[in-house]
Image (cartoon, rainbow, N blue to C red; front, side):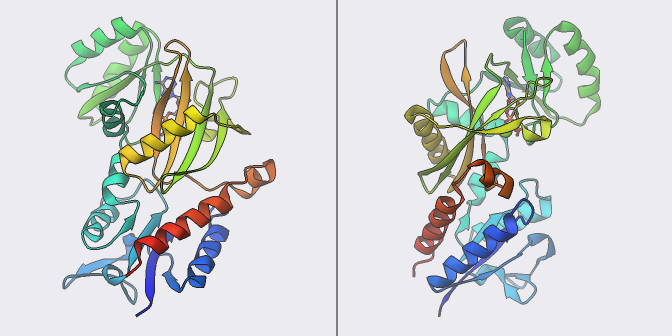
Length: 299
Ligand SMILES: Nc1ncnc2c1ncn2[C@@H]1O[C@H](COP(=O)(O)OP(=O)(O)O)[C@@H](O)[C@H]1O
Ligand SMILES: [Mg+2]
């Protein structure tokens, strides 16, 4: 029997065109693709997971490349499927990279530099106070956020005092804070697929924000990474077990070294506008993904 995979890829920002290219290249290798397999619309019964006419669990691989922020239902099925078939990214890698604390912890365990961080219980405001005295500037981060949303820079005691009652009101289990890194307000986004370097670009924060995210007003620019940046990104992708990773890196001016802010498991392809700017890694990325799917589904 021929090979068939399931796929769920975002369609905005040129995603629809990328999907067409992937499907075509897979077909050339004799691999069929069932697209738009959103697990939100799937049902599990009688030992199978059904999506329309497909038994998703009987496909040869599942390529999940849509919203990072999935509902509990979707991730529940993601986890179940991963027990019986290859998935890109694996459920483990997906759920790890969805959480900034878990990721930073693992990276540090493997000797990869990240900003200093601390995690403490929500009731432990004493500890938070201690950290504040030590670091003087820190960033409060939701561990499962994206796009810079919810990140709060705590610059002095007054900000902390103001923030605490607000945080206490939210239903949080813990506080995850990072030391505020002194950097030049630019970052590197390095894409790695199947252990290979795919491409890199930079982002620069706007004049009025300290975050480089485009959603926070940051702008994308062409940026050549040096060998060190590429090596760090590759190592991070390996440690996280991500088949596909977009690694966010900044240069810490005080420590004089690169630090990893986060690993994204679903890094966007270059949009049509970015391609016009000169970000030309989509082709390489597609080819590496197709090669990898081919290899992982060989019978
Ligand atoms: N510890 C830090 N010190 C200084 N700036 C930071 C720190 N952490 C994050 N930032 C800034 O905030 C942006 C968003 O942080 P990041 O951890 O990548 O979360 P998100 O998932 O929201 O993109 C980064 O691109 C960077 O510009
Ligand atoms: Mg980021």
